[in-house]
Length: 231
Image (cartoon, rainbow, N blue to C red):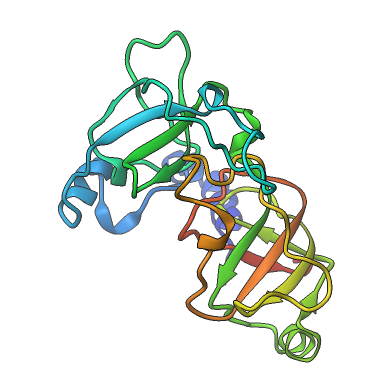
């Protein structure tokens, strides 16, 4: 078996530039060359809402978790389809002096939260809650089943991004964890003030808190996280 890079090198040796220099695909192969938003609308009816800038919220003035408690600010504009947007994506809001990027969605209030800077702190998180661990390494699975803790591994949340460090993994069974407390939500947790407080975190199955060694960019609900130990 050959890796993709080895195939590219062979193609380059044989003068097959169309193969050796072909751009790697990062799209969703089964939808083809279609607009992703149009593809989603074939399965989910469009859901309209509004865009709100997180910097227009009064943050850190709410409860002990840092949940915002101010009234909803003036929207930046209407959103045609909340379902078609994902975290970190350019929101495509017209008439702004700078691009706006999606940092969160609240389907109960039909709000898409955005920021005006690609490196805005609301796009980063220090931890993530994951479900349905599927182990390939039996040795790591045994360590996990015995201790319910794992450290010193790496993760990827997106294809083609480098492996990044995991400082610790802890079991969360819905009744709290033994040992260290649950990672504290950032001040952007519960952006709509009243609806998304910490007690609304209801777990349907045993889950795991993964803490990152450095803040992770645009971690998205429903996304897969792949763990590595070296290569």
